Amino acid sequence: MATSIKVIRVIKPLQYDCGMAQKVGPEGQVLIPKKFRNELCIEPGDEVEVSLSENGVLIQSVHTTKNLRGIFSGSGMLEMLMSDRRKD
View 1 (spheres, rainbow, N blue to C red):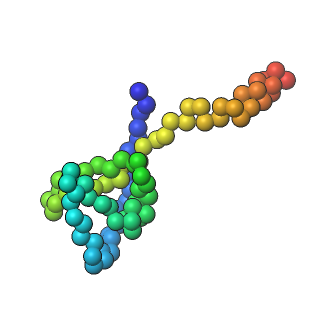
View 2: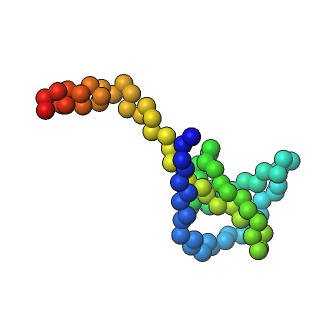
């Protein structure tokens, strides 16, 4: 099982714009405004943590490490490393 690392970003005050109210969808979905997604680097498929806070619902970005297994397959890197080892 892969271990994930939770990165806690520095909380900085946000400047709220008018018109940021969102409707709750039929299954409880709420759209995170693009401005906030960009600020927190949240992309489709990313996980967020939802919790209750003193003032309402808190949605926080959860950044996890990505599995790098197989990222270099087919690159020839293994053969280059093995060749270098043989020379030593």
